[in-house]
Image 1 (tube, helix red, strand yellow):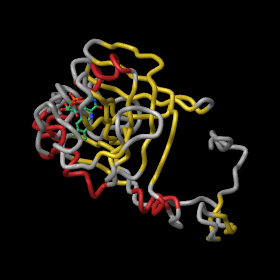
Image 2: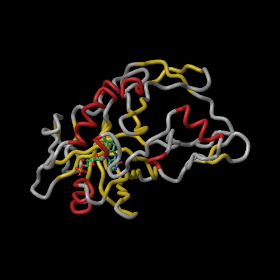
Image 3: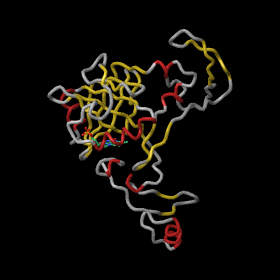
Image 4: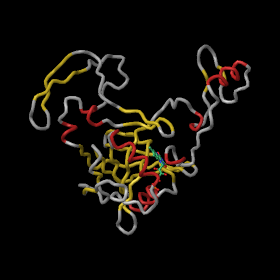
Length: 250
Ligand SMILES: Cc1cc2nc3c(=O)[nH]c(=O)nc-3n(C[C@H](O)[C@H](O)[C@H](O)COP(=O)(O)O)c2cc1C
């Protein structure tokens, strides 16, 4: 991890100052900026040189168990759902990381979703030496329902997973788990706009993140909805159009 603020082993190339950039570009001498047709600029096939990153990933805290039964916690930022029936998720990890080694051995992990209020602590966690228990990182471990690795109490949501397969790419591995249980803070699920309480965040580039601060809904219809505590709150609903690329996405 670059100074704790970037992805492990993925240094960012120094960027020329704005003035340099336009001059260099005009002279056709800037190495990583090729004009393509119209208003499009080609980006290099290297995330270390992207600005901005056109694809971003959610920051999560993955908990696993070490061989001696103690816990390990580490931030990862390329977590995504990969299938909905049954529910599966995957994330990227350096093969030499404790997280990957623990998962490949024990086949269990929990993906915890921190809110942006924990961002500084999440970055600090990546810098801590091992062994790095949940407590050593300043978080609180609470038991999971279906797997041995614990949940992180300070995170707002948790996905308990069992490894089903992994794919290796050089020194990286894509770990793919079936989601056995999902839980979230009642404060989040009961909120009128749960996303504004969840405040999940994505990794943008070294030392920078973007926050999902709330939901912007398409359409304007407001319908009441039953919450998990039986309260009725209004909910804005979008009207799926025939152009909706994911009309049946849950
Ligand atoms: C916000 C953030 C996101 C990160 N995302 C990843 C990632 O997606 N994959 C990865 O291998 N390392 C990632 N890292 C680096 C690891 O968290 C770091 O190297 C950590 O010390 C690895 O811990 P572990 O060996 O216990 O797994 C990230 C670090 C930060 C701060």
